Image (spheres, rainbow, N blue to C red):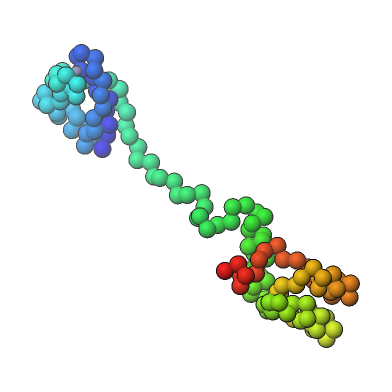
Length: 139
Ligand SMILES: [Zn+2]
């Protein structure tokens, strides 16, 4: 398909689509073109404006993708924790202390209150706050 800007003898401008340049010439040659405004058959090409099919661009990113690098890192960390560590819920302080005392390397995560966290840190138990709410709590 090709788009032509057309103009009649009255100066009305309009656009029309044609199968091809030859199709346009054929219609024009047989006087089968008419002005879209006044119906005059004296129509000529004003300016050729071929229309190139533009593929619509895909969205920049899927909607579920993290919005920024910080979110991406958090998502990665969360994935790693939830995959590699055992969720112990409210028993976190108890379990962390037990694992530390037993010198185990078992990764766990769960909830602890401020007092428990303070106690663990004072006893040298290596813990760190997670920058997200564990899945079982979030859902
Ligand atoms: Zn006209």
